[in-house]
Image 1 (spheres, rainbow over the protein chains, first blue to last red):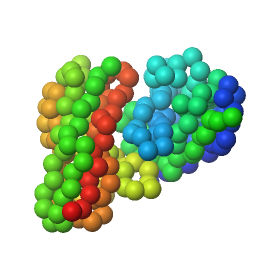
Image 2 (image 1 turned 180 degrees about the vertical axis):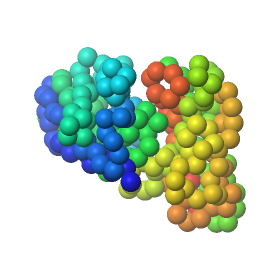
Image 3 (image 1 turned 135 degrees about the vertical axis):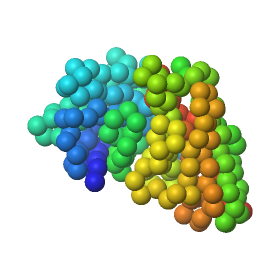
Image 4 (image 1 turned 90 degrees about the horizontal axis):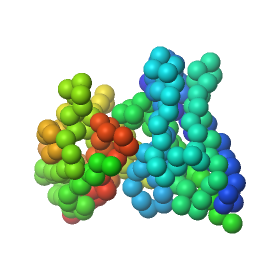
Length: 117
Length: 112
């Protein structure tokens, strides 16, 4: 069974940084791309970005709203995907989820990031 | 970006009756490999999203067979054959054919 656990959320001031982690189990992590999504309070779902597996170059794609500020990376030896968030804005306030692949099979419980002064 | 338009946005249904949600894309979702990357998600109140359907019509493991997906090109539908109380929540369509990945606005299903 695919299990994903996000962590690292919290309250942060605008302009500061935060790193989220997604710890995976139940599948061969290195074989899969990993995605991050978010959901602002009371709003719909938004795709944040994606990292391909090493077999496909480990390259990344990002939504325009976060490109240049957010970076996705992965440590296949630990089965962890990361979301490094820099220059945070109040509009980045959301629950952040990681999923397996772009097709989003399997979601964690999410981690809340609140950007506020 | 591909715009995904769902209708209706609110769907009051009677227990045991069918329900249908439409999702239309601003351009074809057929990828160069011949697949159509259109998925449906359910988000129950207070819970994380859960994928129900992938590639238009494939049900995920554990999803009741009262849920079905259909469609092609730019026009897609999620149907619930007989709504149960546990089906209350918000349903989203999502396309993964074109970058960036985009979602519909969500359809809130509630019991009358």
